[in-house]
Image (cartoon, rainbow over all chains, first blue to last red; front, side):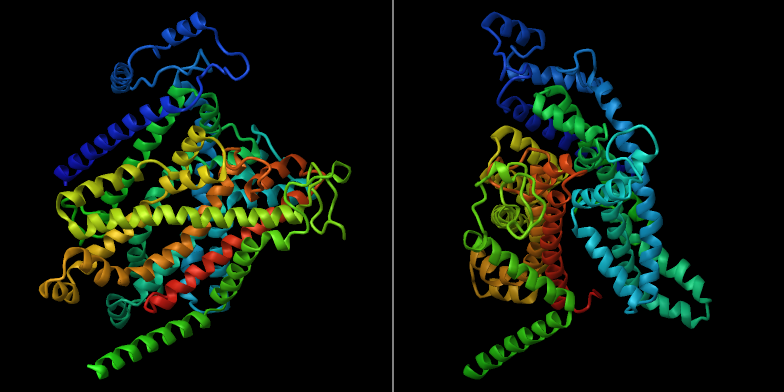
Length: 310
Length: 291
């Protein structure tokens, strides 16, 4: 187990390293410079000075080595655009809003998705089951920005209940969370349902019933616990996804989150911020995949983690 | 020999009939199929179906609500909204199919290499998959769009280059599973070369799964294309895109409801159609899975 974990973490480190190299080269490929030269092109010496100030005049391998060295000290550098900010501060400005929406979304997705999935599975092929399946499929499919537009149209404009855009009070959180949680809730409901049905058909459930266990015990202790296993694999990647936020949702509702910073950083050619957000997301994703694999062995002792076999 | 061939043909026919029967029994799948056919029809014949071209504007008729002259109204520069939506559907479909060509080519080649050859080749493929999983595809696509500039072909390229992970993983997994099967070993035993075994014997068995995947990936790509355009990183004017129409409409949401409603409904209908077909295909191919 420990050997396996170490191997995985080392592999993650390798991946992050490769990602950082590819990105570093790609970021410098982006046409244009961070100094908004579209409107006022910088003259020769001025540009040289700027390049020098930000270390962009050095050969690219030196720049990359420096970046890695700083990365090793968890230093992501300074933003080129918000000149008084470190990249960490830029991320820290966006993250709370994103995380707030992500956390509520996660909460809703689980607390609604799992029970709905269970109920649908218990009433398989009933009208309720069909309704849930249909709604869940719809919820997964319809793009969240389309849902967002409908919410704005009906809840904000027609009924005038909640603000269309902005950030600060609790009213601003409701619509983004509703629009954003529709897909993950549906996904979890559908997955729970299928997973429950699969578990219900297995031999050990027949055994549990045969030995006379009460139905609630069979469902919760035997079926649900086993149905949980595949859900873990689904949820793992879902968490960083939600916590990094939906750029569309943030854009629609004017949420000052990390997604918006990412988009502006691309438009602004703010190299360190682009890199910083990418690296953070890569590490976050890698770690959650790793953790969900570990959790998997805990939930299903039959699975042994040995060598990497995707 | 002929009797054997006949038996095989009969078997194939029966499997096909079985498949059709199961697919047809699923009402949603049939509805989805009809929606998909209609969408493809709209995309193919956009220039005949649309009342006007997508880039003809009349400023005196700007921002009109739906009327008999313009069934879906007009946009901010007076272009017929119905025509715009018809052409935007074409954009969505072209992008979705174009991206599939790229992702499937990359996915099938990498997956086949890794899954069938195994050994160090597979190690490399697994590594590549792992690295590509590390970053959300959409972020990469956004980045590439920043690099290349905004056009439909660039969108196809960006989404294709960033979106092949699932295809690769599934192809690889299937090859791993089929490699050990008797008919493959038999084919190898009678001396068929690797290429022939991989593409004549194993690959046809994978096609159904890839078809299901395709049906699910198309709406995902349509979503992402609309998303890129929604953020202003997608297709430039005057070519219409549903995502761009939705994002533009947000500025007018208090006064002109039709500008947001129609494109968002359209994109919902398209993506749902494909997903229902995907569900139906999967269930019809694999009756043991319960919906």
